[in-house]
Image (cartoon, rainbow, N blue to C red):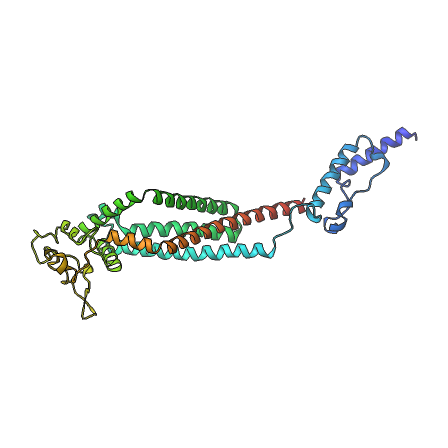
Length: 342
Protein backbone atom coordinates (compact mmCIF):
# COMPACT_ATOMS: atom_id res chain seq x y z
CA UNK A 1 0.00 0.00 0.00
CA UNK A 2 1.11 3.52 -0.60
CA UNK A 3 1.68 6.05 2.19
CA UNK A 4 -1.51 7.89 1.34
CA UNK A 5 -3.63 4.75 1.64
CA UNK A 6 -2.05 3.73 4.97
CA UNK A 7 -2.65 7.21 6.32
CA UNK A 8 -6.27 6.96 5.23
CA UNK A 9 -6.72 3.63 7.00
CA UNK A 10 -5.09 4.98 10.15
CA UNK A 11 -7.37 7.99 10.16
CA UNK A 12 -10.39 5.67 9.80
CA UNK A 13 -9.20 3.53 12.73
CA UNK A 14 -8.78 6.60 14.95
CA UNK A 15 -12.28 7.72 14.06
CA UNK A 16 -13.74 4.38 15.11
CA UNK A 17 -11.81 4.36 18.37
CA UNK A 18 -12.93 7.91 19.15
CA UNK A 19 -16.54 6.84 18.74
CA UNK A 20 -15.94 4.18 21.38
CA UNK A 21 -14.38 6.80 23.67
CA UNK A 22 -10.90 5.22 23.61
CA UNK A 23 -9.04 8.44 22.81
CA UNK A 24 -9.56 9.71 26.35
CA UNK A 25 -6.53 9.89 28.68
CA UNK A 26 -5.75 6.46 30.04
CA UNK A 27 -5.10 7.74 33.54
CA UNK A 28 -7.64 6.85 36.22
CA UNK A 29 -8.70 9.87 38.23
CA UNK A 30 -7.92 8.11 41.49
CA UNK A 31 -4.34 7.38 40.40
CA UNK A 32 -3.40 11.02 39.84
CA UNK A 33 -0.96 12.07 42.52
CA UNK A 34 -1.04 15.70 43.65
CA UNK A 35 2.73 16.15 43.34
CA UNK A 36 2.72 14.82 39.76
CA UNK A 37 -0.42 16.55 38.55
CA UNK A 38 1.48 19.47 37.01
CA UNK A 39 3.30 17.09 34.63
CA UNK A 40 0.31 15.06 33.37
CA UNK A 41 0.09 14.45 29.65
CA UNK A 42 -1.35 11.69 27.56
CA UNK A 43 0.21 9.38 24.95
CA UNK A 44 -0.25 10.13 21.28
CA UNK A 45 1.29 9.27 17.91
CA UNK A 46 3.02 11.23 15.27
CA UNK A 47 -0.14 11.16 13.16
CA UNK A 48 -2.06 13.25 15.75
CA UNK A 49 -0.38 16.35 14.39
CA UNK A 50 -2.36 18.45 11.99
CA UNK A 51 -6.11 18.29 12.00
CA UNK A 52 -6.18 16.83 15.56
CA UNK A 53 -3.80 19.35 17.19
CA UNK A 54 -6.49 21.84 18.22
CA UNK A 55 -8.72 19.19 19.84
CA UNK A 56 -5.71 17.64 21.63
CA UNK A 57 -4.71 21.04 22.98
CA UNK A 58 -8.21 21.76 24.33
CA UNK A 59 -8.50 18.28 25.90
CA UNK A 60 -5.08 18.65 27.48
CA UNK A 61 -6.01 22.05 28.93
CA UNK A 62 -9.27 20.65 30.33
CA UNK A 63 -7.46 17.73 31.96
CA UNK A 64 -4.76 19.97 33.40
CA UNK A 65 -7.41 22.32 34.81
CA UNK A 66 -9.31 19.43 36.43
CA UNK A 67 -6.15 17.98 37.94
CA UNK A 68 -4.95 21.32 39.23
CA UNK A 69 -8.25 21.83 41.08
CA UNK A 70 -7.93 18.46 42.82
CA UNK A 71 -4.24 18.16 43.52
CA UNK A 72 -2.12 21.27 43.19
CA UNK A 73 -1.66 24.18 45.52
CA UNK A 74 -2.50 26.74 42.81
CA UNK A 75 -6.27 26.05 42.98
CA UNK A 76 -8.88 27.06 45.59
CA UNK A 77 -8.37 26.03 49.22
CA UNK A 78 -8.78 22.42 50.22
CA UNK A 79 -11.79 20.75 51.82
CA UNK A 80 -13.49 22.08 54.92
CA UNK A 81 -11.22 22.30 57.91
CA UNK A 82 -12.12 21.57 61.51
CA UNK A 83 -12.76 25.29 62.07
CA UNK A 84 -15.50 25.22 59.41
CA UNK A 85 -17.24 22.36 61.22
CA UNK A 86 -16.97 24.23 64.53
CA UNK A 87 -18.49 27.37 62.98
CA UNK A 88 -21.25 25.30 61.37
CA UNK A 89 -22.37 23.61 64.56
CA UNK A 90 -21.92 26.80 66.55
CA UNK A 91 -24.42 28.41 64.16
CA UNK A 92 -26.75 25.41 64.53
CA UNK A 93 -26.56 25.47 68.34
CA UNK A 94 -27.13 29.22 68.71
CA UNK A 95 -30.09 29.20 66.33
CA UNK A 96 -31.54 26.17 68.10
CA UNK A 97 -31.41 28.02 71.43
CA UNK A 98 -33.07 31.10 69.91
CA UNK A 99 -35.69 28.84 68.32
CA UNK A 100 -36.59 27.47 71.76
CA UNK A 101 -36.71 31.03 73.15
CA UNK A 102 -38.97 32.12 70.30
CA UNK A 103 -41.32 29.19 70.83
CA UNK A 104 -41.58 29.97 74.56
CA UNK A 105 -42.32 33.64 73.80
CA UNK A 106 -44.94 32.66 71.22
CA UNK A 107 -46.65 30.23 73.61
CA UNK A 108 -46.73 32.84 76.40
CA UNK A 109 -48.27 35.41 74.06
CA UNK A 110 -50.91 33.03 72.73
CA UNK A 111 -51.70 31.82 76.25
CA UNK A 112 -52.23 35.41 77.38
CA UNK A 113 -54.54 36.18 74.47
CA UNK A 114 -56.60 33.04 75.05
CA UNK A 115 -56.68 33.43 78.84
CA UNK A 116 -58.00 36.99 78.61
CA UNK A 117 -60.43 36.04 75.83
CA UNK A 118 -58.96 38.77 73.62
CA UNK A 119 -60.48 37.16 70.53
CA UNK A 120 -64.01 37.57 71.89
CA UNK A 121 -66.29 39.77 69.81
CA UNK A 122 -66.53 42.50 72.44
CA UNK A 123 -62.72 42.67 72.89
CA UNK A 124 -61.46 42.13 69.37
CA UNK A 125 -61.44 45.87 68.69
CA UNK A 126 -58.71 46.55 71.26
CA UNK A 127 -56.48 43.62 70.38
CA UNK A 128 -54.13 45.92 68.46
CA UNK A 129 -52.91 47.50 71.71
CA UNK A 130 -52.71 44.22 73.61
CA UNK A 131 -49.14 43.56 74.86
CA UNK A 132 -49.72 39.83 74.48
CA UNK A 133 -50.11 40.35 70.73
CA UNK A 134 -46.62 41.89 70.68
CA UNK A 135 -45.29 38.83 72.52
CA UNK A 136 -46.93 36.54 69.98
CA UNK A 137 -45.57 38.41 66.95
CA UNK A 138 -42.08 38.67 68.44
CA UNK A 139 -42.07 34.96 69.28
CA UNK A 140 -43.27 34.00 65.80
CA UNK A 141 -40.65 36.11 64.00
CA UNK A 142 -37.85 34.90 66.29
CA UNK A 143 -38.89 31.26 65.88
CA UNK A 144 -39.19 31.47 62.10
CA UNK A 145 -35.86 33.29 61.66
CA UNK A 146 -33.90 31.05 64.04
CA UNK A 147 -35.43 27.86 62.63
CA UNK A 148 -34.48 28.95 59.12
CA UNK A 149 -30.86 29.47 60.15
CA UNK A 150 -30.74 26.24 62.15
CA UNK A 151 -32.15 24.01 59.40
CA UNK A 152 -30.15 25.81 56.72
CA UNK A 153 -26.87 25.28 58.56
CA UNK A 154 -27.67 21.68 59.51
CA UNK A 155 -28.75 20.69 55.99
CA UNK A 156 -26.24 23.02 54.30
CA UNK A 157 -29.08 24.50 52.28
CA UNK A 158 -27.89 27.61 50.49
CA UNK A 159 -31.41 28.94 49.88
CA UNK A 160 -32.33 28.83 53.58
CA UNK A 161 -28.96 30.27 54.60
CA UNK A 162 -29.30 33.15 52.15
CA UNK A 163 -32.82 33.84 53.45
CA UNK A 164 -31.54 33.77 57.03
CA UNK A 165 -28.60 36.02 56.20
CA UNK A 166 -30.79 38.54 54.36
CA UNK A 167 -33.35 38.68 57.17
CA UNK A 168 -30.63 39.05 59.80
CA UNK A 169 -28.95 41.81 57.80
CA UNK A 170 -32.28 43.63 57.56
CA UNK A 171 -32.77 43.21 61.32
CA UNK A 172 -29.33 44.67 62.04
CA UNK A 173 -30.04 47.63 59.75
CA UNK A 174 -33.39 48.27 61.49
CA UNK A 175 -31.72 48.20 64.91
CA UNK A 176 -28.99 50.62 63.86
CA UNK A 177 -31.60 52.92 62.31
CA UNK A 178 -33.72 52.72 65.48
CA UNK A 179 -30.75 53.75 67.64
CA UNK A 180 -30.02 56.71 65.37
CA UNK A 181 -33.66 57.81 65.37
CA UNK A 182 -33.96 57.39 69.15
CA UNK A 183 -30.85 59.51 69.73
CA UNK A 184 -31.92 62.28 67.36
CA UNK A 185 -35.60 62.39 68.43
CA UNK A 186 -35.33 62.16 72.21
CA UNK A 187 -37.87 64.94 72.81
CA UNK A 188 -40.53 63.41 70.57
CA UNK A 189 -39.99 59.98 72.10
CA UNK A 190 -40.53 61.39 75.57
CA UNK A 191 -43.80 62.92 74.38
CA UNK A 192 -44.89 59.54 73.00
CA UNK A 193 -44.04 57.89 76.32
CA UNK A 194 -46.05 60.50 78.21
CA UNK A 195 -49.03 60.01 75.91
CA UNK A 196 -48.80 56.23 76.25
CA UNK A 197 -48.59 56.31 80.02
CA UNK A 198 -51.50 58.70 80.34
CA UNK A 199 -53.55 56.35 78.14
CA UNK A 200 -52.58 53.40 80.35
CA UNK A 201 -53.58 55.36 83.44
CA UNK A 202 -56.96 56.24 81.92
CA UNK A 203 -57.64 52.53 81.21
CA UNK A 204 -56.14 51.29 84.47
CA UNK A 205 -59.25 49.49 85.73
CA UNK A 206 -60.42 48.28 82.34
CA UNK A 207 -57.29 46.55 80.99
CA UNK A 208 -55.50 44.01 83.17
CA UNK A 209 -52.33 44.15 81.06
CA UNK A 210 -52.05 47.93 81.27
CA UNK A 211 -52.72 47.76 85.00
CA UNK A 212 -49.94 45.20 85.45
CA UNK A 213 -47.45 47.22 83.39
CA UNK A 214 -48.34 50.48 85.19
CA UNK A 215 -48.02 48.87 88.63
CA UNK A 216 -44.65 47.33 87.72
CA UNK A 217 -43.30 50.68 86.48
CA UNK A 218 -44.50 52.62 89.52
CA UNK A 219 -43.28 49.99 91.97
CA UNK A 220 -39.92 49.45 90.26
CA UNK A 221 -39.10 53.13 89.72
CA UNK A 222 -40.82 54.32 92.93
CA UNK A 223 -42.93 56.89 91.13
CA UNK A 224 -46.58 57.86 90.73
CA UNK A 225 -48.26 59.14 87.56
CA UNK A 226 -46.58 60.44 84.41
CA UNK A 227 -45.25 63.79 85.70
CA UNK A 228 -46.80 63.92 89.17
CA UNK A 229 -49.13 61.90 91.38
CA UNK A 230 -51.96 64.31 90.54
CA UNK A 231 -52.07 62.91 86.99
CA UNK A 232 -54.36 60.22 88.37
CA UNK A 233 -57.07 62.87 88.43
CA UNK A 234 -57.72 61.99 84.77
CA UNK A 235 -58.90 58.49 85.68
CA UNK A 236 -62.70 58.32 86.01
CA UNK A 237 -62.48 56.18 89.15
CA UNK A 238 -59.71 58.19 90.89
CA UNK A 239 -61.13 61.57 89.95
CA UNK A 240 -62.11 63.64 92.99
CA UNK A 241 -65.61 64.16 91.57
CA UNK A 242 -66.16 60.42 91.03
CA UNK A 243 -68.51 58.49 93.31
CA UNK A 244 -67.16 55.69 95.46
CA UNK A 245 -64.32 55.16 97.91
CA UNK A 246 -61.62 55.51 95.24
CA UNK A 247 -62.39 59.20 94.60
CA UNK A 248 -59.27 61.40 94.99
CA UNK A 249 -57.14 58.27 95.44
CA UNK A 250 -54.14 56.70 93.70
CA UNK A 251 -53.33 53.02 93.01
CA UNK A 252 -51.59 51.08 95.80
CA UNK A 253 -48.48 50.80 93.60
CA UNK A 254 -47.91 54.52 94.32
CA UNK A 255 -47.62 53.90 98.06
CA UNK A 256 -44.30 54.08 99.87
CA UNK A 257 -45.26 50.96 101.84
CA UNK A 258 -47.93 49.08 99.84
CA UNK A 259 -47.60 45.93 101.95
CA UNK A 260 -49.50 45.79 105.18
CA UNK A 261 -47.37 44.15 107.89
CA UNK A 262 -44.82 43.41 105.13
CA UNK A 263 -46.80 40.51 103.66
CA UNK A 264 -50.28 41.51 102.44
CA UNK A 265 -50.94 43.99 99.61
CA UNK A 266 -52.83 46.93 101.08
CA UNK A 267 -55.21 48.06 98.35
CA UNK A 268 -56.46 50.98 100.47
CA UNK A 269 -53.11 52.64 101.16
CA UNK A 270 -53.62 55.30 98.47
CA UNK A 271 -57.20 56.22 99.36
CA UNK A 272 -57.67 60.02 99.59
CA UNK A 273 -54.00 60.73 98.78
CA UNK A 274 -54.86 63.48 96.27
CA UNK A 275 -56.61 65.48 99.00
CA UNK A 276 -53.36 65.72 100.96
CA UNK A 277 -50.82 68.47 100.46
CA UNK A 278 -47.37 67.44 99.21
CA UNK A 279 -45.77 67.62 102.66
CA UNK A 280 -48.34 65.23 104.12
CA UNK A 281 -48.58 63.04 101.01
CA UNK A 282 -44.82 62.36 100.75
CA UNK A 283 -44.94 60.05 103.76
CA UNK A 284 -47.72 57.98 102.14
CA UNK A 285 -47.06 57.94 98.37
CA UNK A 286 -44.32 58.78 95.89
CA UNK A 287 -44.77 62.30 94.59
CA UNK A 288 -42.53 62.24 91.51
CA UNK A 289 -43.72 61.14 88.08
CA UNK A 290 -42.43 58.07 86.27
CA UNK A 291 -41.11 59.91 83.20
CA UNK A 292 -38.54 61.75 85.29
CA UNK A 293 -37.60 58.52 87.04
CA UNK A 294 -37.14 56.83 83.65
CA UNK A 295 -34.82 59.60 82.47
CA UNK A 296 -32.71 59.38 85.63
CA UNK A 297 -32.54 55.58 85.40
CA UNK A 298 -31.36 55.74 81.78
CA UNK A 299 -28.69 58.33 82.68
CA UNK A 300 -27.44 56.16 85.53
CA UNK A 301 -27.26 53.00 83.41
CA UNK A 302 -26.10 54.45 80.10
CA UNK A 303 -22.88 52.42 80.16
CA UNK A 304 -24.64 49.12 80.85
CA UNK A 305 -27.30 49.80 78.21
CA UNK A 306 -24.64 50.68 75.62
CA UNK A 307 -22.62 47.56 76.46
CA UNK A 308 -25.63 45.26 76.09
CA UNK A 309 -26.60 46.91 72.80
CA UNK A 310 -23.07 46.59 71.38
CA UNK A 311 -22.81 42.94 72.48
CA UNK A 312 -26.16 42.02 70.91
CA UNK A 313 -25.30 43.84 67.71
CA UNK A 314 -21.86 42.22 67.66
CA UNK A 315 -23.33 38.73 68.07
CA UNK A 316 -25.63 39.34 65.11
CA UNK A 317 -22.79 40.65 62.95
CA UNK A 318 -20.60 37.66 63.86
CA UNK A 319 -23.50 35.38 62.96
CA UNK A 320 -23.67 37.09 59.56
CA UNK A 321 -19.95 36.43 58.96
CA UNK A 322 -20.30 32.79 60.06
CA UNK A 323 -23.24 32.33 57.69
CA UNK A 324 -21.31 33.87 54.82
CA UNK A 325 -18.30 31.64 55.56
CA UNK A 326 -20.56 28.57 55.59
CA UNK A 327 -22.10 29.59 52.26
CA UNK A 328 -18.64 29.93 50.69
CA UNK A 329 -17.59 26.54 52.05
CA UNK A 330 -20.72 24.84 50.71
CA UNK A 331 -20.20 26.46 47.30
CA UNK A 332 -16.54 25.39 47.16
CA UNK A 333 -17.33 21.80 48.21
CA UNK A 334 -19.97 21.48 45.51
CA UNK A 335 -17.63 22.83 42.84
CA UNK A 336 -14.86 20.49 43.98
CA UNK A 337 -17.25 17.53 43.94
CA UNK A 338 -18.34 18.46 40.42
CA UNK A 339 -14.75 18.74 39.19
CA UNK A 340 -13.83 15.39 40.78
CA UNK A 341 -16.75 13.67 39.06
CA UNK A 342 -15.89 15.22 35.68
